[in-house]
Image 1 (cartoon, rainbow, N blue to C red):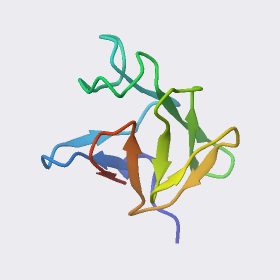
Image 2: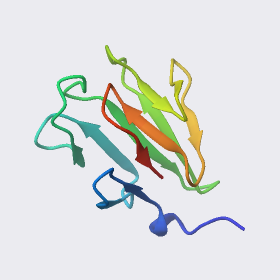
Image 3: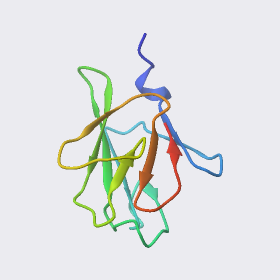
Length: 99
């Protein structure tokens, strides 16, 4: 059984939940990002998580970053990654986030 799209969140290492309710959830250092990270290893526009409404999947795209985006410690390269519940995501050298 698939989880409801609205129920998916990122869990920060500090225990804060960030709901992934938008079709495109942007991560980076800029103020207008959905998730703003302060790490210097995170690009201004680092990654985007998009929802495929037909299949109800979350898809992580790295935006050509210098320090990379990782899912379960595997680097996201040119191909987007379909996320699964409980995946660990790392943006640059930031500590792990849980899905």
